[in-house]
Amino acid sequence: MTKLQNKILGCLYGQALGDAFAMPAQVHPEDTERCFGWLDSWQDAPEDHIVHAGLPAGRITDDSEQAFSIARTVIEAGGVTLAAAVSGLVTWYDRVDGDNSPYVGPSTRRGVNALKAGEDPRRTGLWGDTNGAPMRIAPIGVLHPGDIAGAVADTVTVCMPTHFTGPAVSGAAAVSAAVAVAMVDGVGLADVIAAGRRGAEMGREHGRRWFGCSVSFKIDQALDIARGRGDRRSRLRRIYDEVGATLNVPETVGAAFGILAMANGDPKETAILAANLSGDADTIGAIACAMAGAYAGYEAIPAEDIAMLEADEVFREYDVRGIADGLEALLLKSRGDA
Image 1: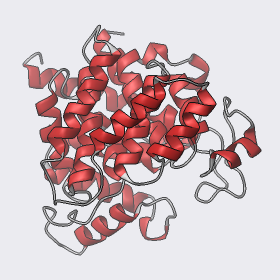
Image 2: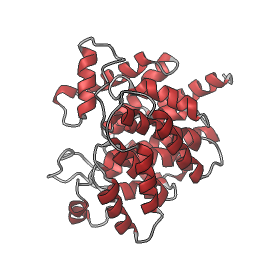
Image 3: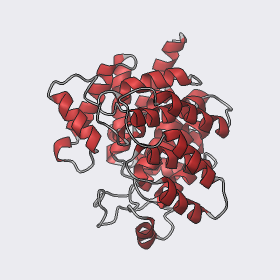
Image 4: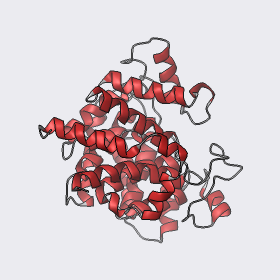
C-alpha cells in the first residue's frame, strides 16, 4: 500500500467507522449511558432509537452512503461537476426510497424533490441549512492534497443542489479543507485543524446568506473545551451542552473538530468519543473520523473494525476499495501522473 492509498482508504473507512460505530448512540448522553454505559464496543441500535431502531451493529447510514454515492459519480464524470453531484444524490435517494425513508434529512429531501421536479440545481439548495453537506464531503477533500482553495471550490459545487446556504457551505468547506491538508504525508494535526478553520472562513463567502453563528466560532469553542480540564466524559458533556450536537451545521462541525482534537487524531478513539457525545452522533462521527482517517491513515484503523465494516451488506454494496482506486486514479490524472 502506498502512502497515498493509505490516506485515501483511511478517509473512506474512517467515514464509515465513525458513522457505523456511533449509529446506536441515543440523542441524549444520559440515554446513551443508560443503554451502554461507556459505549466502546460495536452495538445494535436500541429498539427505542429515534431514527436507527432495528439497525444491526456495524451498519453504515446515509452519512456514508451519500459520500460514497457522490464519490462514484464524480469518478464516472472524471471530476467534480454539478451534474455529478446531482446524479450522486438522486441515485442514492432513489436507492433508499427517499420519499419513505426515515433517514433522509430535511434539506436533502427538499432539494432532491426539487431536482426531480426539474428545477434549476443552482437554486434547489438555497434553503438547505442542515448538516447533510459536511457529512458527505470528505471524498472531495481527498482529491486536493494540500490544496485548500481547490477543495473549497469543488465543495461549493457539491453543496449547490441541496445545501447552498452560507453555514452549510462553510461547514462542508471546513471538512474538505481539513481532509485536503490531512492527505499530505507527515502533516501535523494542528495543521489539519487550522486548515479546517480556514476552509470554514472561505466557505462562508458562498451560498445564500443565512442566520446563525459562524462555523469557525463553534470550532474554536469546541477546541477550547477539548483541550481544557476534566476527564473525557465531562469534556464531552460540555461540548454537548455548550457547542451542541444537533443537525445545526456549526454545532455538528464544531463538535466534530472538538472530538478529533480530544482523540489526537486517532480514528477509533474519535469514533468512541462521537458515540458517547450522543446527539447526531453518527454524522459527527462520520465527519470527525473521515478527517482522522485521512490524517492517521487506513493502517491506524484496527483490523477488527475493518472486518466489522466489511461484514456489513450495505457497506459492501458500495465497493469502497473500488471507490478508493477511482479517487486515486482521478487524483493522479489531475497531477499529470497518469
